[in-house]
Structure formats: C-alpha cells, structure tokens
Length: 260
Image (tube, rainbow, N blue to C red; front, side, top):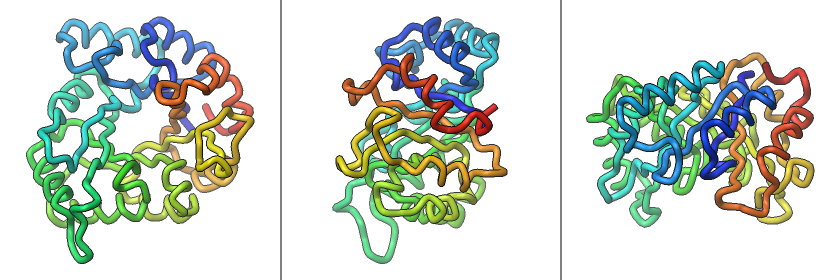
C-alpha cells in the first residue's frame, strides 16, 4: 500500500518540514490541508502552484488529495471549482469534500434538499479532477455515501465523484470494516485511518492508546492498491502526540510488510 499522511497533523508547518517528515519516515503521499494559514490554498499564484508541485514531485511524493472544507450539500455557495483547479494544477488525485447536509432536510423516500444541491454542483463542476466525498458529518456511514453515489450514477452519468473512506467514522457509527468496504468499493479512491478509543466516545488518541481494529482493516484491503492515509487530527486535538512522534509508530502499528 502507498502510505501517506494529512498535513492536518502538522498545522502551519512549512513545506520543508512536511517533506522532511515524509521522507524521514518512509511515507510516500500527502493529503494537503487547503486553508489560508497553510502553504496550500486557493490563493496561490500560477508560479507558486508550479513551484509547490515541483518541490513535492522532486521529493518523490504523491499528493493523495487537496483537503478542502467544501460542503457539497450546503445551502451557501461553495468554492468547489477553485479547489478543483488547485488540485489539477498540483497534480493531486482529487479534492476532499464534506457532505455537510442539514439533517432536517432529510426525507424518508428520496434525496434531501442538500443532496439535490450537491447533484447540481457535481453536474456543473470541472471533470479533470475527482471530487472525493468523505464519510463525514451528515454522511458518516458508508451506507449513506454509497446511496448518494448510486444516486449520482443514475442522475449525473459521467460524474467525477469518488468515495474517501474515513474508516474511523464508519466504524464509530456501527458499521464493520468489511461492511463499509463492500458498500463503498464501487466508488472508492482513498482510505483514511487514525487511532481512536471506543471507550472514550471514539476520541482520537495516541497510536498505542486506542482500539481501532487496524488488523481487520489491513485484511479487508489485502490485495488492493488504494492509497492509505493517516489523518492525524492534531489541529483539532492538540493533546495528541506530534507527527514526528507518531509516524515512526505507524509502521509498527501497520506491520512492516503492510506498506511500500
């Protein structure tokens, strides 16, 4: 498996530091958090985008995703196109988006108002780079994301939406990893993992302090070639150990033969 990490785990870090973390710990991919306070953002000039892409490629790394905070189902206008253009310029595999639906919009027998908005956004979005819909917030289960992707297949043929499986989210919402994988497999593009403690309401914890079933995940993914990305949420959970402490432990957690 190709192993990467999200720069959410080193908020505000300089590019040089991120490259050093990856190369020094045998990680070959990055999810780049796109935000005004990061070196990756939609305000970069064409020259800055070329320089950023060159630096990452010259370091032998792949950009698994540009991690946006676009909410595909939201009422407000969303900067989807700008993030897709940024990802295309950087050579990324896709743009991470959240569903961001309003639970009150749900209907028992059809798409919600938010999902209809998402259909419209996908219909008009550039198709050069995939939209990576994460199992998150309003659609934290594989069942919900798979149902929406199936709706897209029917209503927006040729769409560019793929699934980003946050395995901790589906696990914390009661789906087993084999169940979630089977549901998402037709659209799956990228797999995220993290350590969490189910005895503490699935709170993110240090690698050696949780009970996420990593061996089961590796069994489910055996024989596949999906990029596997550590989403270390230090930005939102500052009590977590740093990436510098965590990345070496990840190889032990996964097993030395699990990644390349």
